[in-house]
Image 1 (cartoon, protein in one colour):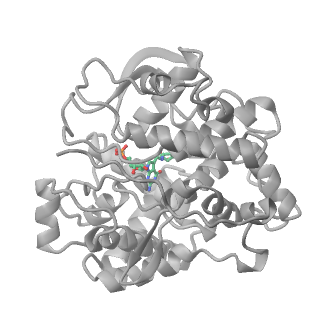
Image 2 (image 1 turned 45 degrees about the vertical axis):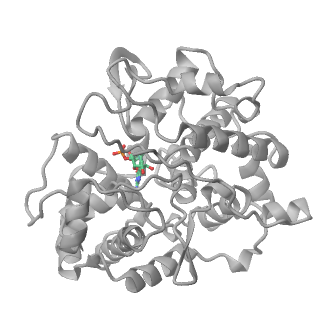
Image 3 (image 1 turned 90 degrees about the vertical axis):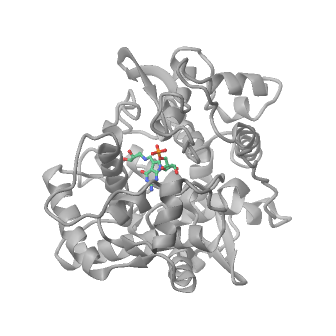
Length: 407
Ligand SMILES: Nc1nc2c(c(CN[C@H]3C=C[C@H](O)[C@@H]3O)cn2[C@@H]2O[C@H](COP(=O)(O)O)[C@@H](O)[C@H]2O)c(=O)[nH]1
């Protein structure tokens, strides 16, 4: 099956005033439209269902697992490929400006790693060392293949691949250099999916960072805080990403209504927040120093293809037999179709309900940290490292196969 390339020509609002173009919404208009969109799409599609009994049982179990593991926003930095060399105590530190550009590019390209060769060594993989400081070799697949490829380019090949002025420039950084950054492991027989779209996105986002934000993601953060008198929240940053970067504008139309999912815009902000999360609980967040702080609880989970799979396994989501049959057969599901939107919207609404249940029981968690935990748990289950016991689960079904730049 030929992999469809996805056109990027999302209509970009033409706004004359550069200041207005970068920050189109005034402060009081900030709400997260993803919550209302997901509720609408969940009801309107009426395909995937949320089992509220399953939510209650699984929420209790998830909460106790997270407490047992002392799972926190700091867990993000403990992943071997995320283990960033320096403590992120000062975002204006040149090293940390580089970390911010590294986080930005990862989220700009964090999509569509699933393979028809799933489960075989032929699927796209990247060979790199086991961590920043351990040189034994490992082949990474999925999301980790992206991070390994960028780390390898920086560490082994001396390519400044995460510097916007570099990757935006076709002369400095020809397509062939980018293709080589994502070169596959010897055992793989397929290349990274949607390479042409990834290259196009790099040119687009790199150019925008250079033209509007002084050439870096930290420049965007500085401009954002300036605009909001130092009081910008995580949701303000999500809106700014959506306003300035069409390739993050994960929006669809369902029965004539716009449905905002904004998966990569929200995970960019969540990764930014987690990468710089302060070591001590009492300290303010260095990137959101305002009186309100980040307000990270305004963000939803990130509707990808991995978390719906574990929500179903945990009996939080129920799928009709027709959908189960399609997933088992690896049938391609169109981007923006009712089935795809139902899988994504139900996941968002379900995690909001899991969060509400945990808070009602005295917990204090955001949908963001619950999502990070569920994604990590799904990966541990996928590689056989862990099994869910203590609650009734249903057989694991393969993740849905949609090829798009959105997740
Ligand atoms: N909802 C959600 N989706 C996430 C992530 C992450 C990586 N987050 C890591 C960083 C910190 C956390 O602790 C995680 O360790 C990637 N993805 C999405 O998954 C898909 C890739 O899946 P696979 O092919 O199996 O690797 C693809 O759509 C990608 O966009 C997440 O956290 N949440």
